[in-house]
Each structure stands twice: as C-alpha cells, then as structure tokens.
Length: 421
Image (cartoon, rainbow, N blue to C red; front, side, top):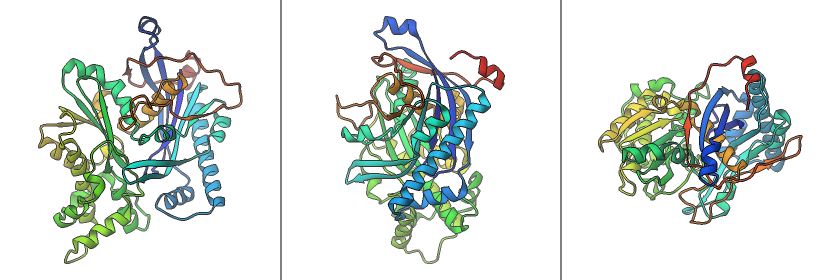
C-alpha cells in the first residue's frame, strides 16, 4: 500500500512530506489470524516551506491570537491548499499515484483542562488534499482518542511499539525514544512489549520563540546550536522554569505551545529576578538545558523501566548543543543517546513514517492504543475524506505483529512510476 504522509509540527517549520510503501506479510497474516508483520520503505521525503505570510498567521493563532470565524475559515482553507500543493508536487516528482493520504494538519490548539485533554484543533481542510491527490485522505487523527477519554497524544508510541518491541524482547532491555520537535515526547518500550508514551514539555518551541522575538523574525531557531554554545546557563532562571506544574505531573500527559510559550519564559524571568537582563545567548543556553533536563527527569522518575538507550529524532537532533546537553543529562543514569539515523530512520522524517503507519492501521480498521486510553476504549484514529472516486476499504486486520523499516531506495521518477504497489 502506497501512503503519502503530510504533517507540520508545533513550530510550523515547514510541511514534511513522505511517500511510503507499507507491505503486509500475507503468509504470516494467514497463520496468525490476520496480524501480519509490516515492512515500511520510504520512497520520497522532503520538507516544503510554508508561504511566509500564512505561517505568520498560523503561528499568531497558535500563540493565543484572537480571530473571528472568517479568519479561522480562511486559515483552514489556505492551510489545506498548502498541504494539497505539497502532496501534488511530491506525487509528480515520484511519478506515482498513492492509495491513501494521511494529513495531520497544523496544530493551533491542544486543550488540556486540569490533567485531562478535552479537545484539539488542527487546520488544513482535507477535501483540498483529496482533490489534489485523487485519493482518500485521513485527517483529524487525535480527536477519537480524546473523546474516548485519552490524551490524543503523543502518537509516536504506536510506531515505537511496533518498531522496537520485538528487538527489545530479544535484548531483554527496554528502549526509549524521544522526538525533539516543538514539544518533546518520550516513548518507552519495555522488554515485555508494553509501551508508555507522553509529552515531557518543551522541545524546540521556546528556543525558537525567543530567537524569533529577539531578531524580529529574521531568525526562527538556533542554527547549529551556536547561540546556546556561546551562552551560559542561568541557574536561577533554570530553577524557576523547572517549577512549572506540568513538569511535575506523572505520565501519561500531553501539552502544547499554549502552555509552553513566551508567556511561560517571561513569567519565569520575572520570578528569577536576575540582577541584569540575560543576553540572548544565555537565555537560549538556559532553555536548551531546560529541554534536556525535563526529558532526562522524565526518564529518571522511576515510573518506567530504565532504558539502556535513548533514540532521538526530530529537528532537535540537528542542534549539537541540545544533543550534547541531553546526552550528558541521561548519561547520569547510565543511558546512552543515539540519533535515529543509526537505526536506519531519518531523524527529520520519523514522524512522517509514524503517520503513514497510523494511516495503514486506520485503513485496515486497527485501533489506536495509546497509554492514557482506558482498556477497551481504544478507537480507530481519524476521519476520511473520500476523494473523487468511490471509497473501497479492505477487510479489517486484527492487528499487527510488528514492523521493519527499510532504507530509502534511490529511484528515478520513471522507475517509481513503473513500480508495483
């Protein structure tokens, strides 16, 4: 099955696009009551920049800006058209149709009331994507889990359990993954194949926000971690930041930029009451350490089996200062830090593979089992926009036994067009 994955993370850095082949081992499926092993191979990965003016408007909304119904309609439509354009261009480049598109959309709000998620909103009308791709589109991926009493996040644990459970059972040692996006999230897969996943708190979102504010938007992130490397961690500010109630809550839990935004940084700066204003370098160094410390502290709480290694993905992997800080923090508990690329997965596109897998599961009627969802309450994720043709879905699967990820093949567009699906 050929699936096109579309997503834009919390920081709205760009639209990540992947076209992925997912094949089920039909022989094993027959022997194991329709629970096959899956093989995943990416065929194309790319990131497409948002139109600058639209990105500014989306981030303003995500940062708490008030809009009327007209602006919300426009943003939903324009975002859908941007996703549609990215999908169309990727399919043209590969020279191939797809069976299904999975579009996560752009998150603009994740509503958490007390300790429970109540709702979530991603923009990017799926009908535009379905028209452009001439294929059905699965979207609104988190709402069913929230309605069933879950957090709707993080979704990465679904991928990690399928990917790592068999190997960790062989090793007898649990493994953990961290996705360093705007918000950081952890998954721990135990030697028994169970999984716990949760949002730890800020990933890159605070670093990006203070850099953008200090440079009036000329820069949107700490390129190569150079600002953090040039600064010093302010212990008083770090202590104030670490007092946030969310960071003290046990897993499972979820959060977003509505909790960890500039208002959070400014409140902590006021509480710290330093003798002089911090330089941008010192502020970025402190926020970088905050991300590293909050991730490491989540692993050190004793609520999960301690893993032997932590596999990192997401945009933060490209930040040497963040990776160095995180590596030092987790090493204190005997955990080694590696990038997902040593495991055969591009760090920038692990989420894209995850969404493709989620699309395969929903298409085949497999429920989305997340840690915060009560037993028996797991739901099939997403809603389908059928696209131009009739909707023909396959017989449901009982589940999957696991997945293997193969490296991306170098293919010419002509070769890809002739490949069987």
